[in-house]
Image (tube, rainbow, N blue to C red; front, side, top):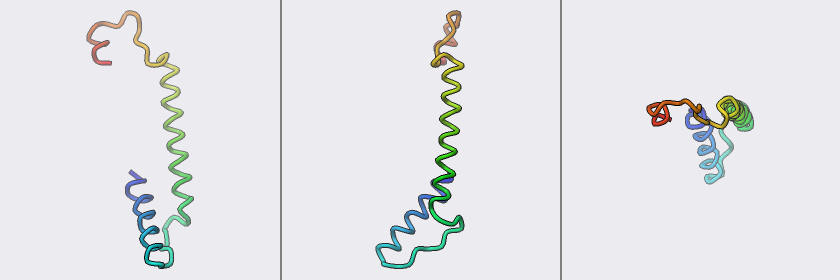
Length: 74
């Protein structure tokens, strides 16, 4: 959501300003590196959560005694 509402619109504004040879617009977050760094950290955190789930579920393996409806749902 942050990318769609904050980062991408700002990048578009930067691009449009460069086409018109205008000065770069002011950003409420300092440089564009700040939201990129924040979002990279959030993506890494989400990836770590998925890696942990993968380990805990033995790579999403169903238990040997899983019933048919459970197997179908997964």
